[in-house]
Length: 224
Image (cartoon, rainbow, N blue to C red; front, side, top):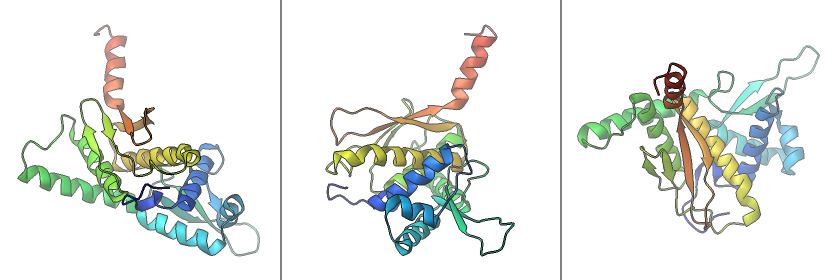
């Protein structure tokens, strides 16, 4: 999947990407949003032990949440899995702790290097701290434009991968970024991956929901 760069984290394995894609899709389906190992094995063709290993890595990273099935019949309850999206019913304590640690490191950096802050508020700044750390751990070298609300990830480490894999990869990676921002808490959301002229180009567009809400309020009251 990669071009030989240092790719790691939740998107370092195509099998892991497929598992995350299935969990994200389950969450968007309007059902429980949870899948069992058997469901994932059937969809991917992977051995149960392989799926368990991938899930454990994803749980430890704060990207997947395990729960024990509630049963009203006899039999051992299954462990079910859902993607960590930051929603109240899909929030990972691992991800929350990572976001808090990223904010502390960001504050420390800004205290010793004045001028390295952003034009955004504290909550949004802490969101970017968590997002940048996630991206760096995943093998990217993010460049954040806090005014244009973009994150440039060029050159993409996956540029030389199979073209047919890219749509799923980009969709999963955007979902991960959305989850990181939601877990950190604040007004920023990951809106989309912009269309690019070259495979090596990758820019993610963010959205400031607080600013949009303020603009809507201003229009409603004749202030804009």
